[in-house]
Image (cartoon, rainbow, N blue to C red; front, top):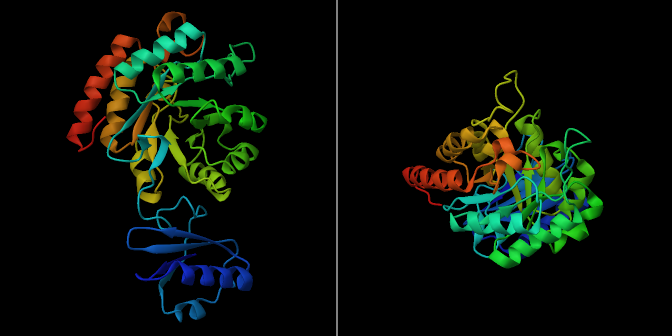
Length: 339
């Protein structure tokens, strides 16, 4: 249930109304102060809430029932677009698109620092790289783990780029807190609800990837877990879904971008590298994502893709990343945005 308040309502009145609703009906009240409009989202069992009594409040404009199971991630609750700040000056969700770039896995100090310098020079504003790598095969490279996290932090110190990296275990949260600027929850962990609950108690941004077999509603319900814990800094990432097609690694659901932008206020980025799984598909899929309204991209770049320890087939070389960034700037300008 959503309560839209009239202009001029004071914070004291909202506090009193929220207290009454909680004590009388046992619901949780989440206020959202927008530009000219204040909205109260009622969470929990709202079946007993007396709507007639609410409408007698002089500052209540209208009451709306929300049919979707996700409330906090719902645009009805938060009409304005949310902008998530990963680091000072690096925002996801505004007019300027953010590009997160780097290798699938951190392999050495020399590698990650070299990649960081090159992607920054071409306009990337966030460094991506995996320290803990969940892999389909237990025999595949699993990442450098804590050492990889330290190397990412060193690359940050060298270049100034904020870091996004994947976390797989709730027990690692404290270890990650001072070493990265944005947690990444991978596709395989999208419904790892215990991890989501713990990340929800932090205020650090979380980049949430859509599972390759999950619906949009399930995707947003996972975002709801993070937000219900108090963390509103959530970035959605479409990275391709599993279909009957076998030519590509996954199928990029480009329609998910406008759908998510319509029903949710959270920023949306696209990972064209995992979507296609082939290096020459990255640029066209990235251009399509920008044209569709994505707020940013996550692109895999490696100094030597042919010898990468993971996902070399979908990684761009420095030269191809430079070419891709050039074409993306043209597409962004065509839709009234910039990189």
